[in-house]
Length: 274
Image 1 (cartoon, rainbow, N blue to C red):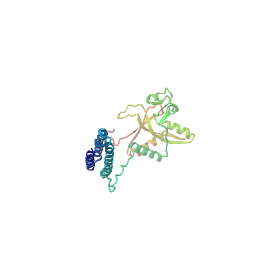
Image 2: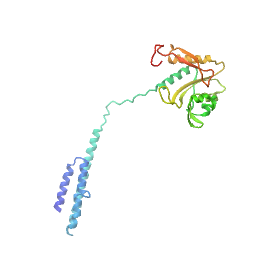
Image 3: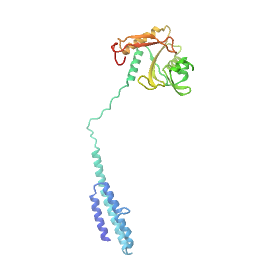
Image 4: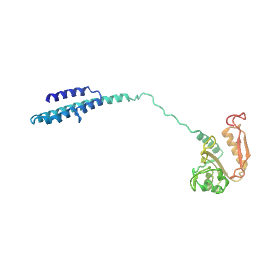
């Protein structure tokens, strides 16, 4: 058995030194030192030895195990270093390569138009007013003289959150809030923002869209002032050559009511827009 142990040690050390990766090294460890390994089998066979041989062979087995474990540890450290160097070489970062510049973002087209509209009205002496998008029924309807049975409510299928809270259906609540804060001083504001309706999504409808409205409260203001402001706005936004037409219309919440038509950029030649 002594010769068998010496031969096992020599063969195992040779295999260990020939291992090229940690996986192969672990296979050798299991094959020799594992629960079903060669050296473990020899230990289990010591029961058949004489009482005199048992301590001698036992000491030899322990010495062989220690030598194999020492060689395994040394070879394992070498292989681990080699594998790490290989990984580092594969993951090498060339710090001399030019950096990747982040892509520059840009404003959304809606935001660009909104900013242009605001600049036009600021140039005419207006200020920008804002309000919450989640409104109370009072500010969205009642304070605008739209009681529960008012026909205008039928024109705006609202998105209610609670019985008295909803997503605003227009930016008009901003007018009420501004008048509460400003009264009795003159007012000249525009109120741009997102509004919400229970509309099916298609080419011309959306459950969320943008509105902009203005409010002027001042002595001597007439419908002519409204026409003048809107005409200047249209020509500033769309171009000086645009034609503007005011025509009577019906809205259950304003009196008098009118709509504004603007000529197309094709000058009447016909295009996919008009």
